[in-house]
Length: 188
Image (cartoon, rainbow, N blue to C red):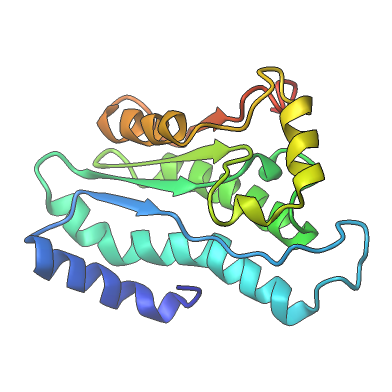
């Protein structure tokens, strides 16, 4: 889903199907692997697609869910899937890195403004060997693992545990949890 127009429908269908909603996981992201240094590697339509998927969609999801989350006795939470690319000058593409940095700022702004009933946080994973992460060439995967302090990729269970912790924690908003096997210890 890269369109904000779809967000109200998704929220409405979820509420109808589940009888309510108290958590949103915004796991949307878009990129196209490209040469980070090549300013012509992605055209402006692709930059716009990155912006829409990585920044506008999480905003639109929360906007659509806000009345329901505020009506819940215990409120609700939105957690976005960010990326350590938000903190560095690297990643799958320049537009991805720039828009994930904007998403991180969005989480901080929403966390600051949408309480006390709504908490907004993000998880910033490093290299996850998901279908998407496996699109990196083998030599790049090996280099990223070697560059990580723990000498391995991010384990999916560890990343999932960060989401679970944020879903349960009622004392955090506007925060990030960086799960990157020590790839960017200094980032921050």
